[in-house]
Image (cartoon, rainbow, N blue to C red; front, top):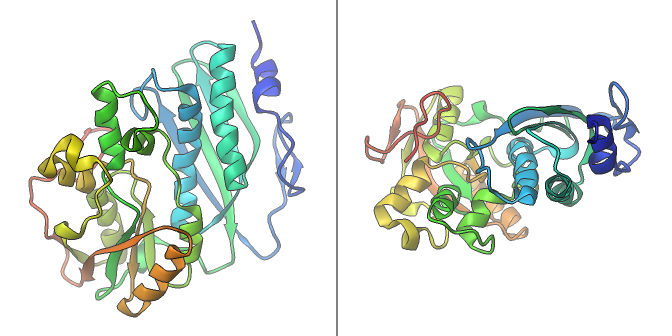
Length: 315
């Protein structure tokens, strides 16, 4: 049976993407050289089996997803991803599973310009902790507390696909070519979109726990309220067909796992923001506005507010 050190060497030791990694996998710590004059941006997420992904999900999708949800936090700040650490806990070391998991993880590393520079492997219930490091010029970070009354609210891409994909999995769908299932198991963090929105958006957050829950975070941090236009929500393709119209809107508002960017913008900046994102092939939809009056209006009180780990609120 392989030791954790052999597993690290076999599946997770790679040549760094660039010379910013002075010392990578294989020592007690990694040594990194950020770009001169940049701020370091750091975030961590944990993905737990049967909480964040099904135990029977394809291993490559689990690897991809574990990294993607952390990269989405960097995207929300407009940061450029550089490095990541991974703490992997496994019930047993199966070579086929590990090779497939590592493939999914490394493919997204390569696509995002990220080097895996260290981590740990232990035995236990399957979980993956990923810490991502990015960088950006000082003072350019998109934060939650910059929204102002009078700003418009907009969202990239479409909503509800993550929850629709979970429902598709629960209904027995296993083909990752299904767009809803792909949205759930293979989310694509909006890294380039976040970078493009620097300098035009006043606040941003990634939609991980549900639109309403994440909008509430922005409103509380910025001291504003919001008026939503429910009819303007961009629903994921196939969502209405799978869930029905009412449940599709509930999924878009509270389902979570969409990893789109929710942003606030001065009305005068909407055209510029849309043009920047259209150049990347990313749609931007205005879904409401911000106001001085606290609270979120325009949706029924019966719509769940989003995912909370110790309450489990979902649509």
